[in-house]
Length: 218
Image 1 (cartoon, rainbow, N blue to C red):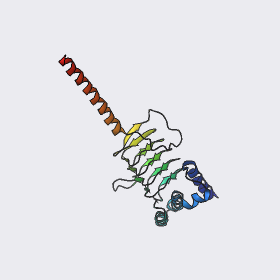
Image 2 (cartoon, one colour):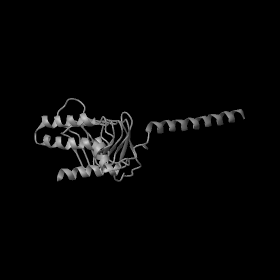
Image 3 (cartoon, rainbow, N blue to C red):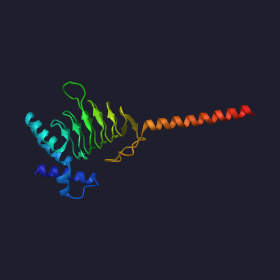
Image 4 (cartoon, rainbow, N blue to C red):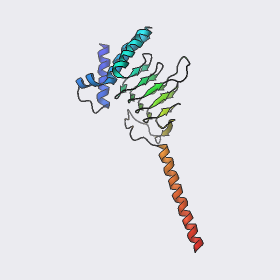
């Protein structure tokens, strides 16, 4: 009974966060993120009981059918949602909190060949956008948004937005993000902001030069 309750929760999460989901049958048949989580939950059970080879085999079957690779050793909390999902990779020692949403092409990967914890820990209410890479053993705080294509290589505090390569932190005016904020298409761009500031300074300098030339001619 517990397994069916878990599946029902996973389906409810899809209806909450994907406006394209129209019926229970559609979700069950056509959502690879849901299928990947089913394979993960079975393989994770075997992994915890020491059946490592069988666990990896089951996870590879899931990878073949869904194009989503979740290592059976990863720890995933409640309310996890993979949207679209193709190309998602989640490493062995990754830890994911509650109400996390990730999109296609996301990697939660490790660096180096060291043993032990080598993949990131993701907090609660985090959104990781298309193609983002989070690489290394560090923590992404709660209520964080990571922009599309970003490469995050170091820790991110709570209530922040990260964009760019390498990822740069942009604090959102100190305002806490309540719940799951999926507006990952409206992230700030610090490079654009810096260029705009330079343009403003250039315009200001040109104005001063024109004023000096005018006063000299007079």
